[in-house]
Image (cartoon, rainbow, N blue to C red; front, side):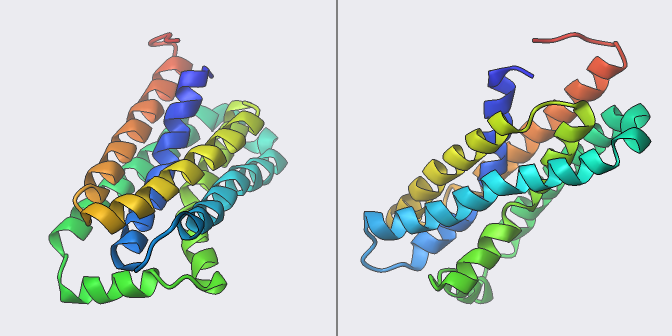
Length: 198
């Protein structure tokens, strides 16, 4: 897998954290770099760890899934992508006063809340780790890349949310979903010897 594909996957995985970071930024008063970096560290750390966990879970069952690995990759990536687009659409259309109260809850900076948010935004990375194990691709580069990109985008997200509101979160999550779906299709077609790219 090329470095461009790794970066695309890493950026796509970071979109959930980016969206939640924007939500945090919406209601954090007196935002500063320390607060923004704290959010980034939580999200970035879990985004780096989850692919490794998924990779070693899947590696345990490698022999049983080798013959269908490309289908697993396609289904996982496509499902993640579709779910990201669906959640972005539903969030955009169901936004109301109650959602604003939810944003205030999500913006609580205590460790317990941040860990829960970090885990929930990195579940997709767990599934991608499983995908990489199926494809027998080393997970180290993706893990590092996902962690760094998520950290950077989360810090930026907090700043954007604090400064400009929530105009961009839905588009970002939708774009991430589309990229994952396209990569899932590419992997399937390559393993079926229909196309050869990169």
